[in-house]
Length: 313
Image (cartoon, rainbow, N blue to C red):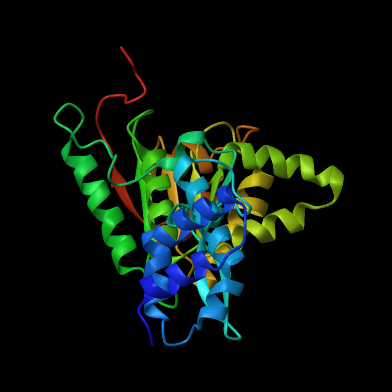
């Protein structure tokens, strides 16, 4: 077969078209990607096939130019690619790396179901965790190591206890939970449900009027990974403790589903000062112990100490 350049010269000489179109096609044929395509397929494309495919070559060249200029194209997020279809030159569109990255990010974000959680959870990561010289503490280091051990070793069909992170307000407990959830989504495609428990308790009380308490409860208790944030904040009624929290924990213990908690209270403090004393002031230590037994089965306690990271002063 004759050389590509000779074939192209013959095509251009034989065209009885306006000068501006001819000049445009010269630019098309000079494009390195067009030349690479024609060279690669020189044995499959005749001179007539190349002539018939000029409009497709121009489409490819034109769309590629728009992308380079940052101008909207016929298929935003997709780049043109020359192919041979049924012996003819054609253009197909494939996702760009940027589109694939955005799709991946959206997929990861959909795996983290956040209910009444702060916005910063969406971007929480181990890389941005507070371990610089000003904020590093031994307990923060221990907490992130335990978190990384969990995400590294997690297997879907093998039970692994979650973490019970406790400490004062603003030490990074909630952020670390978010980082764990995002890492599980990114590295293993695992869905996590994160719930601000005091807000969820209010929602559950309100759902009684809509008669959808069971539906809401099922969605939470069946989550592959569940994170209950700020447990122990606010007064807890007997109904919330026994019929909401107790039901969730019982199901997850029986099904061996990893569960995480964050709290301002240690496990002992949560049991004795919060779970045992209901909103009416009644002391019910046996019921509190039953709840605590499930929490201890589902998670491992880790204290987090350090200065308040939300204090901008």
